Amino acid sequence: TDKPEKEEQAIASLMESLKRVGQIQPVRVRLVTGKRVKLVAGYRRWEARRRLNLSLPEDQQVPLACMVVDENEEEALVANISENVERKTLSPVDEAFAIRKLQALGKTDEEVRGIFSGRSQAWLDGRRELLKLSGEQQREIHSGRMGAQAGLVLAKVPEEERPAVVEEAARRVEEKAPKQEPEGKPEGKPRKAKPVSAREIANVAREKGVLE
Image (cartoon, rainbow, N blue to C red; front, side, top):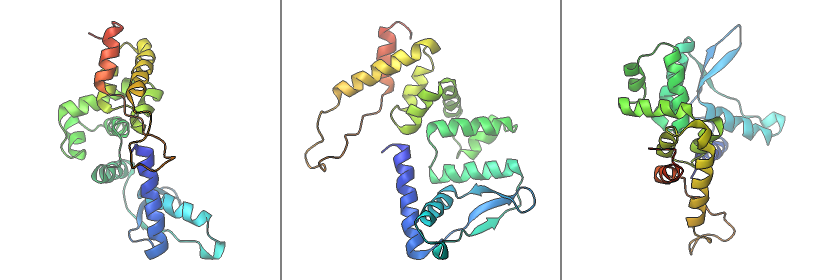
C-alpha cells in the first residue's frame, strides 16, 4: 500500500470515528496573531472533520476541539515532527525535508537523530541524499513506487542520467510483474505495481556506464 492510500484510509477511519463517537483527542494549535491560530499537531483529525462537514447540513456541523499550546515556531515544528515520527506517518522524503527544516533551525546531527528516535548517523546521511533527487523522483519514493534505498543508489548517478535510469528500471519491473491478479483477488481491482528496487536501479545504471 503506498503512502497516499494509507493516508486516505486513516482519514476515512477518523471520519467514521467522528460520526460514531465524536472527537476523542483535540488537535493542538498555537496562537499566531490576535485570534488566528496555526495547527501544530492533528492534521488528520482536522482533515477528517473538514471532509465530514462537507456532507452535513449547516445545523449538524461537527465542531473541532482544539488545545492551545504556548509554543514558538521552533518548538511547534519539533513537536509536530516528533508526533509524526511516533505515529510513523512520514515517508522517507517527508523525513528528509523535516531534517532540512530542523537543521535550518540550528539543530545538530545528534539533536536531529534524537528527534527521530535515535536513528543512526548513516540513516541521517542517507535521508539527506534523497534531497539531491528531482521533485518527480522524490514523489516516486513518497508514493511508494520507488524504494528509499533505490533513491540512495539513484543519487549516485549523474543528475542528467537519472530520468533515463528510472524509466528503464520501471519498465523492467513492469515487464516482470504478473499480468493478472493472483487467484482469489477481487475482480476488477487494479494490480499493484512492485516498487522499483535499489538492485534494479543499480543494474540499469551500471549497464549504461553511469554508476561505478
